[in-house]
Length: 479
Image (cartoon, rainbow, N blue to C red):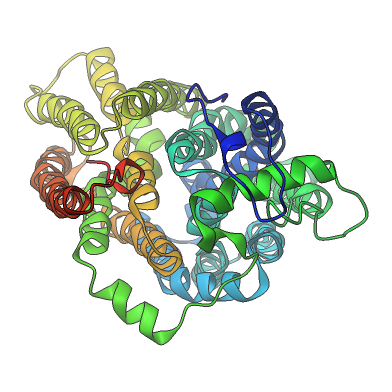
């Protein structure tokens, strides 16, 4: 995670009168990477486990034990995603008031408890209630972490860190099925079904991460002590470098807390670019909503056992990690965001189209291979799009509200995606795969529109720079 770009921080005069060398800054950023990033990645990991382990529970006896249908499962997951969407902006308002580490830590504690308590659902009503509450308290965590990343990292460091943060998402998808395959074998032990053990064990793991956040999560570059205040893993010198290198690039990042006013909310809501980022996530994340929930079930319908379906589902999720890392590195090296989003969409269009045109009776391994290649390219644009918005935000209010809107878009897409795979369309789901193809196809003009708005803004900035004989490369928007 070490940055290749050289900085010349020693040529600046920070407010404390301190200066530092490039090697010192590189060392402290490396330390920050190995300290902060694992905490944030594992937070996303448990969030995603608790959000999506319902797909693994469906391969067990959950529907029979609760007396519910797949369509009612869809409704439950829609309630969860609705809760997330409702909570995104209010959660970010609270985060600005109390500080990111305090609010993020509290969120992990509450949703971990709810995730664990799902094991004692007895009917459709308790299922609906726990899914809705889970969504309400998970809402805001992802944009909250991304806002925190912007406080700790410079503009040209954010894209890679955002992609690494999303590794928690992809890793959960990759390993969740493997973990579930083992846990579901515990069915019958202690009087609990396999799906109950799944919620108990993974919910307990989330609560362990909560204690890790209490012990280790730093408050800000200037105040790196965790919320308990007992110890600090950074020295005074390292804190000075961490804080001043950020303030030199953007003075608005100097405060531990901020306030989003009604005026700043209005300004954000009339910013066309924020809406385009949001709509891009709606379009490109709708397929993920269905594929993430019904992936194991679709593979099982090809004739594989429950255990093998969960194991085989992990392959596509490993491929997501590989492709995501490749695209994020390419995006950083070229400083292009939109074109690499389009590359991701073309990949998904190709394999969803292949599944649409697959003849009846095709070999199950051919169907599995195409499905895995489709899921392997699923939602690749999400991390790049979120980083694109974060990098190009010029105001804290736009960054905070914009990231919340982007994640709202992701979850609105996921909400719609729950309806892609209907029982009446089983087992080949041709209508679902056609819808996926069209959604990714519609994402391309949305991306081109975003690139055009940033290109126009750069033209205006360049004109202003020429008039003032100034250089404003650092203020140019990434395309």
